[in-house]
Length: 133
Image 1 (cartoon, rainbow, N blue to C red):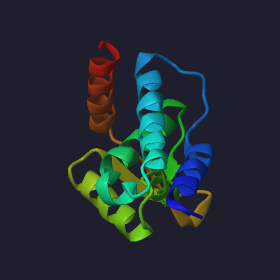
Image 2: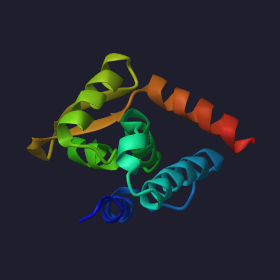
Image 3: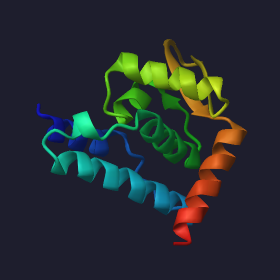
Image 4: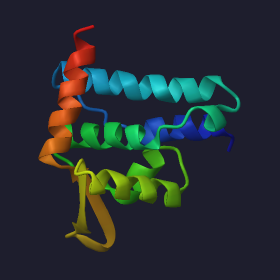
């Protein structure tokens, strides 16, 4: 699977398909779709476009808007990076207080990741700012 096909598969598999709950959610969906389209449009985009932390935050925010915690593996896929890179970014996001991780109560082999209250506030502040533009 080439990089563009992988990005398309991620978009179909992992972006939450919920009716927008407001301008913030619509802006987050738009940003995520634009980032995936950019990856598909440039043949070597993985080498020049890289913001895994941002992609992870967008995906977690979208899951959060429908009240769903996200599996750690899905968060890594959302960033379109190797699992080790995604885990490293999740650790950074957790260390600065934007996300938190916990064991999945239904499946102890999986970890879940969700926004902290601060993470949600900061995402909404940014999304409100760009939604107004």
